Length: 468
Ligand code: ADP
Image (cartoon, rainbow, N blue to C red; front, side):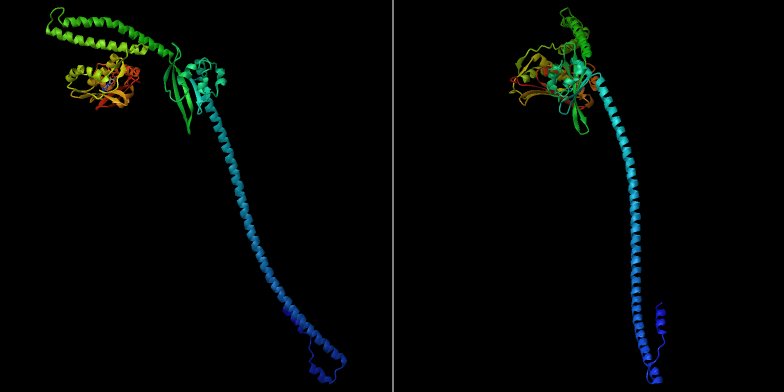
């Protein structure tokens, strides 16, 4: 197009000036005018061409810029388009995610509801068990305030089920004024920390076994449970048994004593001479009778302890001396088993003790007799009396069969004999240590032991000084 414009202006015929002047020699005015116009026109054409060229240049520059801008815009549009697509995708993902979260949340809510319902059911079950339990129960929270008490517990202590609201939130000490709770409060001694299975005698006929259990939760103690188990019936049966044993033992004592003295008289020849063989048989019978007397005495002691009828004749005594007097009586018996007894009294200067000497002798004899009985031939026994923290202690150590770990906790219970003891020494009642424990504790003392099976045992008791 540029080309075309140029040609258009170039095609205007030029008339050479020499030609025009040469032919005529004098130019008419009109021609000069025409030449002038022509020249003017040519100049204008040139100027126009120039303008046109410039315009063309501008136009192409503009076109280039326009193209560049277009390209730029297209690219921006593409970037925007991509961004929109990305954002849209992102939004769609987010929407999907939030929908999923919503579904998950709904599921969680459903699960929570389920759990809540189950927890409610569990707590209802627990409450129902608590309410209908055969034993009386009171639950105190971690601040020792009463939270729950079942109707059994209320009725045990003379209250009605509906009265629970009057005692809710109260501390154990505050229950003293309420219904018949006073004996329980006195028994628990205003504090819930220490009782574990002890007997509470509410009256002659009503006895409860009270247990105090700390209730532990995931994060520590949540409260305390006080349980009252009615053992009135067991106590009554036990009492009847004790009464029966007491009567039977008393009844047996008289004929057995008569047998003892008759045998003694025959053996001593008071009723005429007897042969050696007869004497041997009668000696054996006499010993068996002695064992029977021992057993009957043990039974009588037990019944006295159980009925609270044990009478103590208290006097001030030197324990070392009492033991020292008893030892010689056992040296010969021990010798028969080739057992050596060592006695050391480190308590010559020890304080005196307040005891019923006969009862304490029973304890000392029982510990020494056991050491001899449960130590095999050739063993060793040592008896020591010493002072320990101003108390007086007696220890009997032996190198005997010892006591197995599993049976240790039953050693002081009535009629208990360990399996190894039954095997080695068939005679025994399992009453000696039960009686000894009761006697020592009645004197305000303590009894205990240390033992290793097949190695030996160490039985000891301590008594407070007489000035305490
Ligand atoms: P008994 O000796 O008549 O059986 P005790 O009450 O005196 O009754 O003792 C109870 C049980 O304790 C014994 O049967 C025995 O199992 C165990 N025992 C007591 N003393 C000893 C001891 N020194 N060595 C091993 N076991 C012992």
